[in-house]
Length: 395
Image (cartoon, rainbow, N blue to C red; front, side, top):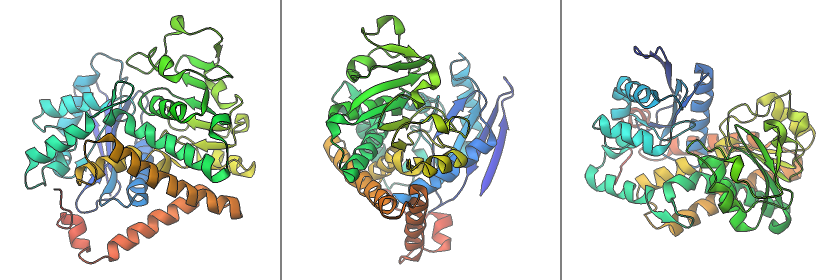
């Protein structure tokens, strides 16, 4: 629907906003920051966000923001603030954003607070009859404590990825205690997935960060490992337990494991390295983690890929359930709903793969299209309400 390009007057950094679809006058999608971010990347991510919202039957369209700048640069938060200021007309009324690669939720909320917008869900919250009350409910959900000393808003995305893995294991009849996992990326999404897979009994045998791959065939004590991370999701090698092998960064793709979870950068699995993948299943925790050509190569070897707009949609779905008052600050309620909805979708995708080897992405696209068509045909849903937002009520 829309592409915007912004140039920072101070640093020269480029920023991008792509709105793929508006539903009820709203679109949702995170804002990422990384050196080398491109318009095409943001377009792909916005398209994926539209697919996520449709797959989980959410009453909102898809968008994405991206900034070509190093998030470790001390000027990064100021660049982010100027980008958000430039995008303010969209952030104020139409675009609900959140954390993404290089931009943690607390940082973007800090920027929104500086701009007088309160919180990054502002465009939806401002529609509520009592925005202050809705904001308090959202903040209570985001900051609800969960086991491990973390907050619900920080782990819910990784929890959803873990449930995609567990749903696949269930569909194939795998014993969880003997199922092994390799995870590329140990930040918010990858770390959360590792924590909940470990808690469920799966063995996380390999993790990779920017410095390389850590491999331990008998499995990691994941909570202990996560304590060694810095603010950028990188693990302090000087504090590693004994018996950990340090391998090259891309070795995570080829270590022996049943499930590979790319949870770091986009386009991590390409035609150049797809042949290295030894896992029986790929679960995309990162957006656009597998290129179409690589996915076709994996399918030819009978390695299915659970697409990003299913596997990592948990955070987006949960945020909207929270906004709509369908879950509350009790983590058990949120975990139960996400577990149920994620595992049911994964079971449906794998059912068609097991029966006829239909690529999981094709089945998921059909589900998303059917949900969107059904929503458009429902009473009260018209082209005019989709653009004006009159059909959506935020309690």
